[in-house]
Length: 304
Image: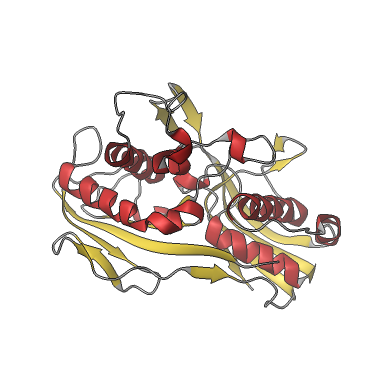
């Protein structure tokens, strides 16, 4: 398979003027980011919806936040060209925090417009986030190596983050692999949600993610999915410690309560795990798997 390009930003809001604990940090960050991005980009901010807008097809906000069915070969909404990586273990129900940290992985059209992302982070820090408009003393953006990209104290981009390339075909097979579901993961088997995925379900989900992202934001290519799925069916589960959790958010734009829950925990698989299986699992460890990845859901870790 051909490489897939992406970029990673690490963002930290330091010194919030009011300590907070958002119940669902991914929704909190994503929602505020969307509001400020529209404020920066859209010349018609009085419009609540983008449907019918004359410049929608040429609008960066539309590319990032408004899924456009006409761009998807399958006729479904296209995935957003970013995912949030939320370190949920840092933010527990009984605690508040004065700093907010998260990572954002960019791909597709987001790669050519990283300055807008940095500008929005700066506005979020200066003008405030949440209903009470909580401000922060400083926002710092770093690249994948931890080097400084931007700090609001200097008000300038110090360096442009490097565009990375996810390469396929360089990994070896193994007899055992451990998977950690770090944020809620939702996978389906025959159109039904799965509470306890086996290796085949996991690989099917990873294949869908790879094919979808590469089809929309990369280079489409023929993948022999039948052979990959059949071989995954021979791998057994040797250990599992899973929990089904609920995560709800209310969408003001859609006027609906949405469930972003799923499974968290750990699984271990044993058997003839092929190099292509490891490729797929490594891919979704970066770009997430299943539903609601742009909110931080679907984060998995892999240990061989």
